[in-house]
Amino acid sequence: MSEIKNLKPECIWRNFDALTQVPRPSGHLEKVQNFLLDFAAKVGVEAFKDTAGNIVMRKPATPGKEGCKGVILQAHMDMVPQKSKESTHNFETDPIETYIDGDWVKARGTTLGSDNGIGVAAIMAVMEDKELKHGPVEALITADEETGMYGANDLPEGELNGDILLNLDSETWGKFVIGSAGGLDITATLEYKEADTDPDDAAIKVTLKGLKGGHSGLEIHEGRANANKLMARYVRDAITGCEARLASWHGGNMRNAIPFECEVVLTLPKENIEAAKELAADYKETFEHEYAGIESGIIFTAEETETPKKEVPEDIQDNLLDAIYACHNGVLRMIPAIPAVVETSSNLAIIDITEGNAAVKILARSSSESMKEYLANTLQSCFNMAGMKVTMSGGYTGWDPNTNSEILKLLEREYRELFGEEAEEKVDHAGLECSVILGKYPHLDVVSLGPTLRSPHTTGERCYIPTMAPFWDLLKKTLEDIPAK
Image 1 (tube, rainbow, N blue to C red):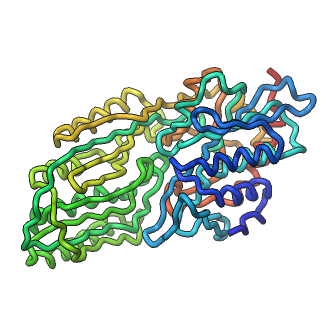
Image 2 (tube, rainbow, N blue to C red):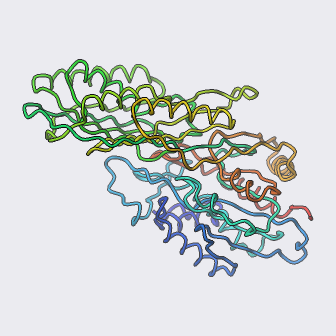
Image 3 (cartoon, rainbow, N blue to C red):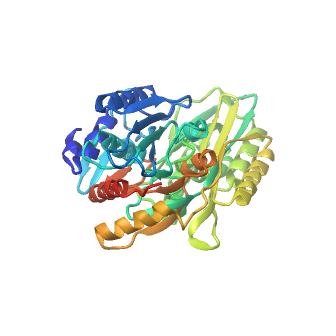
């Protein structure tokens, strides 16, 4: 578990290794908050936890650099808690088990937490470095970014002193992010009175797993399968062809992760069980054909299970299934002026239907406020027609690109001088906290950067080792060359 400490640059990997030993799933951050405060005390920098649960650190300028612009290094402390079906990992108590696979650092059966633990580790490396020459440096390590950017949304105004914000939550080395999409959480709920199951009926548990899943912003354009949307197709045919009835549905567990697993329990006449199993086998072949080259290892099974005493009333079942089937999922539109970048999308992330309660949770994203509103209204209309109550929360605006940014030009110049090539400017479809922080500190000059990570929010999350040293070199050189106020 500790072999990553031997990688270079040692200062980042050692701190990241220490961070992996501290449980920090979103919503359970007391341990990592204390860890960061203890670290700051150990290395001798000022630190405190603010009213939003964020950790702020302050390191004074080295002698002669007091007149430089202040830099805020920003990352988030929480991680997405995803694990494989076979894993017994408890994210609230267990450390992440890391290992090296060629040029990649990975985790065994869970998310790695490099999103955004690598950013936090880089901040720690800066804070403990006694040789680095720099102006005033602050750290803002935010709470609960993954579940609604709560730390950034509740960030007190007047708390930060810097002039420049370097967000360290970007995931492709050599590309500086200068803009990102806004987002909105959409929740549709319905309470219903359960119906009695026919005492002569049997039941099957239908399981879909083995999908890639992924980040609902960064990877939504890749055409990956959504477990909830695939399951809806099977359930509809099982209802019409096998006289099935819906008893329960559980799919997905994070709004910002493409759901890679789904499990449904259906009741049906005993004589139709084999037909339902054959239907599952047929759909497995269909899905493998439709997603050839995108998904591999699709598992889709139907097996007999204990018959539940209750099920969803037929009219409620039909309305819910219609809404799930009709719900928009995936890319809605690309940015007209930048056709390679997604502008608007939605992720049908979580479905829970059981014991008289139905809940559907979606994350809508757009870099256009008008298109985000249009998509939200589209989704609301869809679920309203099913008689569901729809609420919207956790909204945040997009981050408008500033191609004339002074810190962007400095980073591009340093990158060119260090590596002999040009960096790229990028607008992300993923949501970054930059937009929220800019709403409270509009004077900030902002760029996001980081080493290469792949498949965040999934058990395939990994960090590309060869990009870490150049990332650290660029960060150090940029801090050394920050201009005077």
